[in-house]
Amino acid sequence: MRKYITLFFLVLLFLSACSNGTPDGIIDKDNMIALLTDVHIVDGTLITVSQTPDTLYKYGRGKYQAVFAKHHTDSAQFRKSFIYYASNKPVELADMYDKVLENLRVKTDSITKLSIKQNTVNSKKTLVPGTPGAGAMPAMQAPVTPVQHNNVNPRARFEKMQAHRDSLIRKQRNKNASPAK
View: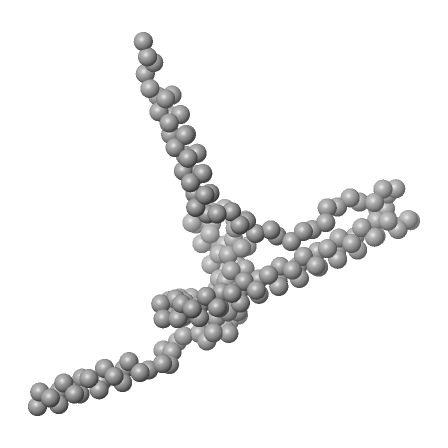
């Protein structure tokens, strides 16, 4: 009898380990890429908002809910899917983020091209004589350049901030110290 019980549990363990399918409620890879792209766009728009928790909640909640509604999901399913990919398939998550970054670059480039085109059209309008608002001198506008990513080493930046903080602390201590006689 003991053999059968042991055999039963071994077979049960073997069958449960063989399941390669994703659990229920996990967002598929393509939809997750689109969702992550939109979530990071919302993150970027919230950078300009005051960074207090109440303000972020006030302005961010509606934007995130709109993104989740657009993709027919909710925050719980997104969180569950993100945790699943991060813990069970980290290589796949890294590949997904490569595609997310590519999507964001494409969107940034298209916005930059549109902005340059709009600036060109506006500058041509000011050069046409006889049009309202056209002066003798064309409007001087700096061309829009693509966003440059800051490739500064984060560790070096952190150490620089620590050194600056330590110097301020030392300065404060020296200011509060009693004068030497």
